[in-house]
Image (cartoon, rainbow, N blue to C red; front, side, top):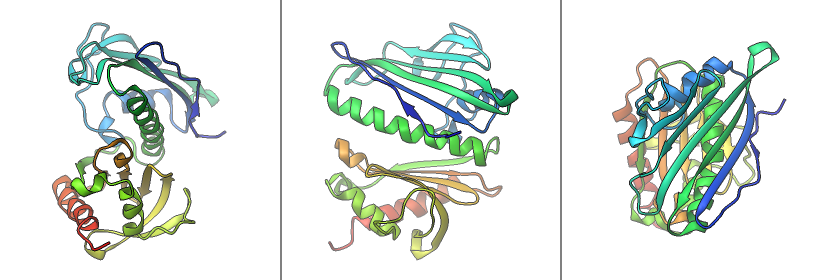
Length: 258
C-alpha cells in the first residue's frame, strides 16, 4: 500500500481553516503514538510531551482535549501567540492495519487565521505534506532512536523569489533528480553527502542519509527566509556542530556572486 499522504477537501468559513491528510505507515499504532507525543524532535521539532489526560497541558500553552492512546489525540489552543492566528487544533486518529504491523493515520489541522488567509493557508497546507512525510521517514528508518536537532534560517537575501532554486543548485541537484533517487549532494565545506532524495518539490527538499534527515524549506515562497532543519540520529550526533556547519553553508549560498 502507498505511504503517500492523501489530501482531503479543505474548507474555510470566514477565517477558519481545515487541513486533512490520511496515510498509512510501516509502524504500529503504539509507535506512531510515541512519535507524536514523545518523539517530535525526530520529524518536527522537540516539544514537551502533553500531560496524559483530557485537560492536560501541552506544548505552546495548548490543552489536551482528547486522549485515548494509541488511537486518538487532540490538542487545541485558543491563543497561539501570533497576530495572524487566534486558534489552532491538531487531531490525530490512529488505527491498526495488517494485524498491528502497520498504522493508518488521519491528521486534521484546523483553527482560525486572522490575517493574510490565502498565504497562511497555502503555507500551512504545503508544510503539512512535508512534515507528515518526514514523520513517516522517521518512523520507517530511525524511530525510536534519540535525536540531536538543529534548525535555523538563511539571511535576508534568502527571501528572494528564486532563493530556493539557488539552494537546489548549491546542493548539486540536477533538474531531473526526483524523489526516491540516490544523490551525492554538496554539503558544508564541500563535503559530499551521500543520501536518498526522499522528498522534492518546488517548496521543499528532503535528504535522508544513513544517520540523519536533513530538511530544506523554501519559505521564501511565503515571504520568509529559507530554513534548514537537521535531525541527526548518530550516536555521537552534535546538534550545535550541525547548526554551525549547515548555517555556514546556507549563508554561503546567498553570499556567492549570482
